[in-house]
Image (cartoon, rainbow, N blue to C red; front, side, top):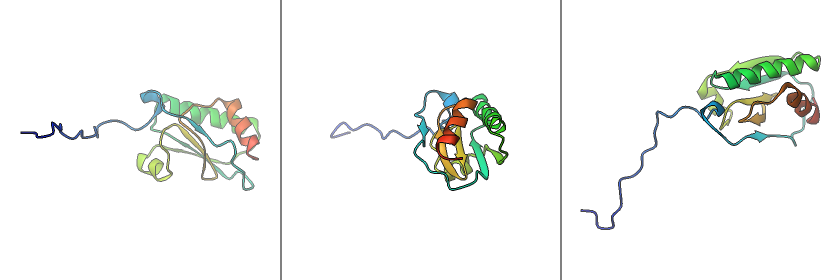
Length: 120
């Protein structure tokens, strides 16, 4: 008998997928006030391998080619590595191990503008 009429605790559904924008709307994030620390050495696109994450990878490569720079571009799909970076929603974009975008697919021109704005 339940004295105060409390119901069972709600257990989270562990079968839910990662926080990827292909699974519905997620909050987006852009670090437009970040300051570059010199040369752009590496770029990481983080995602679960969905079409939106692959679109961000394609747009990133296009933006870097338009800017005539060729840093190492890595596509990370391992969710444990993505979580270790502190990414809460994918697709995400990192430059020199700093998060610059999370939760949205940026166009190539948006990526160029963002990288130029933070000094790369």
